[in-house]
Image (cartoon, rainbow over all chains, first blue to last red; front, top):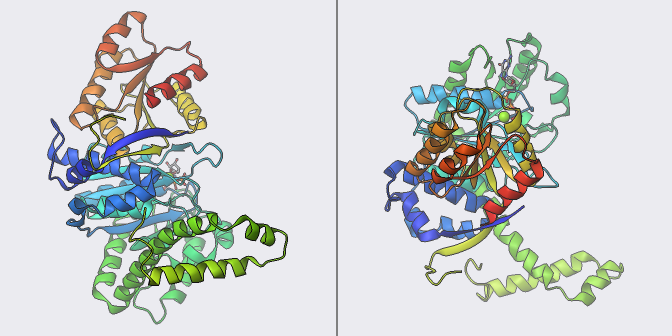
Length: 344
Length: 142
Ligand SMILES: Nc1nc2c(ncn2[C@@H]2O[C@H](COP(=O)(O)OP(=O)(O)OP(=O)(O)O)[C@@H](O)[C@H]2O)c(=O)[nH]1
Ligand SMILES: [Mg+2]
């Protein structure tokens, strides 16, 4: 179900930056309100949002947020841990935003976004921002808008942005290419599930957490993960820590926060860590470029003459030949400067 | 739409978002969850914040989540006090444009005052779920 909304991008941008303030509203609350509206624009109209992100009022702001991903099996306790970690970070004087992604229904597009209910401790803290997002058909555990959302939220100066992904089973995980620190949250009896898990996150997480240790003995799970992590750490400066937590009994949380901080130091101070961060930034540029290209590609494909499409359909012409022609032509046009700058 | 279009004015289509919340002290959330699921099935994104929320909690969540409407469910009888407080709290956070509807055991005699306080629709226990969804959809489109 869709409804129409109107926005004035100029006032929205200047409200986000704080240059203008909503009448009768505290300056900070006004910025938060504008941010929230901008996030909806981003989720629903990524193209307009691209334009919006380049708005001069926003271009003068920058972000220095540490992005921490929490991914893992459904029900492992990601939201409950997030709530507690937010509390710990607040005690350290850090401001925190949470982006919590839950699955959308594939047929109606609707969703019950249930992560926030576990984060009730922080609803009224002005230094905590919580935003739920539907995955809206994306398969990597986050939504298409998540990257842009991190960018926008960061402009308000939050120290940390925690991203809780959809519970992953066998799906791919995009969070490793988005977060500065990716945390994989498992349970003491997750052994069978991680066998099925795609190698991706299991091999790429920066911190491993075995939660619900109050419920059953985590020793086997911990030693399996430690073996995995030591193998990864060999010859490297960062050996991903494997931590035991109980959100229910508030155990292991200081170690968790400590691991997040150590990993941040590693990325700032160590050449190896800096190289990893740099690679992630390059991936982000590539992802954005692909997003722009995808739209151009769709426009080009829509213009392929019927006769050619029919020939491909009849098996007389390879699709690759058509694709190659389109690519060559487009490339020539780019070189001649015929494709407008950031055409919309 | 209007003749006062500014340079930066845009329109876009969005999946509507709804916050369902329970202010006050009663812990009965079956009705609230039932409505939440029906709205999800109608294709909306629904955020349910749980029981015993203060008006400030609810308003902060509504603004951060940028919902298009807030639904309050209350069985304890404190609606005359709490519903208007949610409307006020929304206003002070810049969410005066977010409509609020209410549900629960609400006597007819209270309707007029609640409407005057800014509550856009009221559903009582006999209401049919289809009608509730249709009415909310209508408010979202207006
Ligand atoms: N006993 C125990 N229960 C826990 C612990 N952590 C979380 N839970 C409970 O586990 C259930 C799921 O917790 P969530 O925090 O919602 O888990 P999640 O990983 O966010 O779940 P999804 O977002 O649905 O994938 C809730 O009922 C929690 O109260 C823990 O350490 N011990
Ligand atoms: Mg969760």
